[in-house]
Length: 151
Image (cartoon, rainbow, N blue to C red; front, side, top):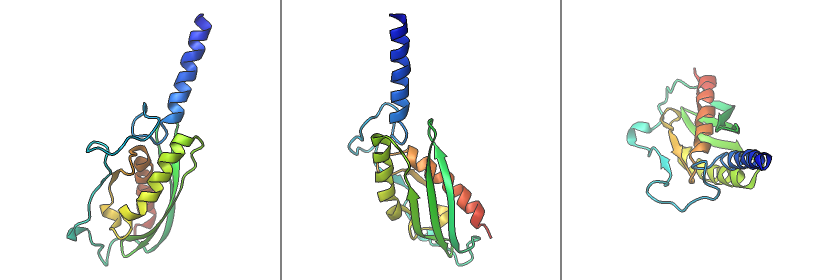
């Protein structure tokens, strides 16, 4: 009985870790409907966020891997920057389990609308498409890209 209990606990722990890769919370196994607490959080653009001509960043295409979560999970992100603004984004979603992949795919689908046309210095993706973990990976990659592109 003791061995069965230990085996069950270890299995439950692995299952929980596997399902939390990009989830809003470790206990979630399916996305919840949007509520005021789970709605996407992206800092809205303002007149002050228009990219400056002399932005401090070189124009070009930059790539980085952003890490997040306890497994750990990651995103491979490529941003194109012109005059300090994001003009294109590509992001690869390498999750292997269905739940994590679902969160990552929804995040990838929503990301371009949240960042294209915005100043790279004003990007602050906190929660997007019901996922907070994926945004942490993106923000990690963004920090690396900002260092690469610094003039």
